[in-house]
Structure formats: structure tokens, C-alpha cells
Image 1 (cartoon, rainbow, N blue to C red):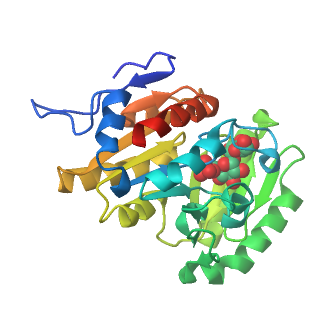
Image 2 (cartoon, helix red, strand yellow):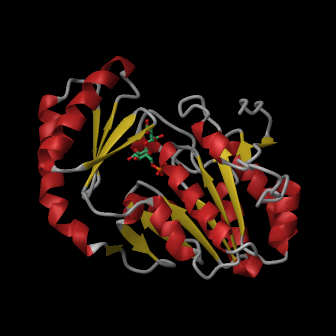
Length: 285
Ligand SMILES: O=P(O)(O)OC[C@H]1O[C@H](O[C@H]2O[C@H](CO)[C@@H](O)[C@H](O)[C@H]2O)[C@H](O)[C@@H](O)[C@@H]1O
């Protein structure tokens, strides 16, 4: 499949063997029109970093792109749910979205969640791993070279090399060795390797559960971990032809084409997503 041009919005044809019609509408206009007829039954899912917020050298300095918060606030009463599904902890997401009604937060790939501003609930099977993660973060601080950034997230540790790209191979090698030693899982991302407990929970599982009785859903994501979320929407649509699933990639040069090729539509950047969502508000009213 060829690379999508760098336009504001591009449709990437889904894999469509034979003469079966595509499962999703042909372009964003059709997709919003189809959504308008079932808005109250539609869930809007968003990844955070690289999707709602532009990438920054410092993970603690990241903020949602202009227009994003206002658009989400305006969309929330028009759809069934809005859910942020991220590798960040819920407490981090709460700082940005906690004030918005009707927004559910899924953190650490679904190991934590908070519904509509409620308390943070942690997956019980993950809790015994908290001490291991703390020790791992301390060891990473002690052993990794200056320039690598260690992000401790209670139930995950992210090892970053964005500000020192030459350290990428060394950091990844160290992280994978520790994962083998401790029995952890790894998730690769944008200049980051994340170590997580061996608990079955990912973005795809979250989406699969939430859309079980929904009539439609959109998922917006930029990274390889978001492909599992796309797959969950595809699976739901395959099981129920009346379900409308729309997968949107937020383009970036780091992830390559993988996410865009798995998506129905591609948006240029988090800032462009803010505009895209703002334009959708009157269409769902
Ligand atoms: O699931 P997400 O919400 O997309 O989280 C994925 C990772 O995002 C963050 O790292 C990324 O963004 C940083 C800030 O822009 C950037 O410095 C880093 O290079 C990116 O990989 C977050 O810090 C990680 O914990 C998440 O795993």
C-alpha cells in the first residue's frame, strides 16, 4: 500500500479483499454523517501523546494541542462516551481532562481507569508488581547513561532516549535484558521502551470491552500500541455489520507507515486534530 500524502486528512483504503464493500465510510465527511445518526450510541476514543498532545522532549511538559480540550468538552454531551486510552497514569491524564464531564480515563494501557472523574481503579493482578517497578526504576537511574530519561509510572517504567538518540540501542538492550530477568512485558514506542507487568491488558482489550454494546466508535492514535485498538474496532465491526468503526491515524515520521496503513483516515498532527474535532461539533448537534 502506498504512503498517504501529507494532507490534512487522507483516506487510506482498508484491506478489502475481493469485492466486499469497505466496512467504513469512504471519507471523513461520510464518517461524520454516519456518526450523526448514531451519536448518542457512539464512543470517541483518544490516545494522548502524539495524538491529543504534540511530542515534547520532556514528558512532564506536554500539554494538549490548541482547541483539543474545548472540542472534547463540546463533543462529550453529544456522544455516548469519550475515553482517553493512554500509557500515561490516570493521575497524569486527570490533570488535563479531570475537569471535563463525561470523559473516562484509561491509564497504563488499561491497568488503571477512572470513570467521569471518579476514583482511580487499578487492575488487582497488577498491584503485586509495584515494588518490582520501583526497584527497576531505581536500577535504571543507577545503570543507564546520562541522557537516558527514566519515567517511573508506579506500574510501568518508560525508558526514553529522545534527547540522546545515539543511546537508543543501548537503552533498548538494557530494557529488554531487565524484562527477561524480571518476567516483564515490553512495549516499544516513539523513542521509548516501556516495561510493564505480565498482566493481560492492552488498549485493544479496553476498546473491545467498552464498545461491546455501542453502535459506533472512533479511535484516534499515532503509535504502534494503537493498532491493537484499531483491531478491536475492526473485530467489533466484523461481528456486527451495523456497527460503525472509524480508525484515525495522527501522522508522524517516527512511527512510519504502520499506523496510517492500519487506519481509515490520517490527520497531520495533534493541532490538526484539534481543528478536525472542532469542525465535527456542529455536525453532531
Ligand atoms: O499511550 P500514549 O498516551 O501515546 O503514551 C505513550 C508514551 O507517551 C509518552 O512518551 C512519548 O511522549 C513524550 C512527550 O511528548 C516524548 O518525550 C516521548 O519521546 C514519547 O515516547 C510518555 O512519556 C510515555 O510514558 C508513554 O508510554
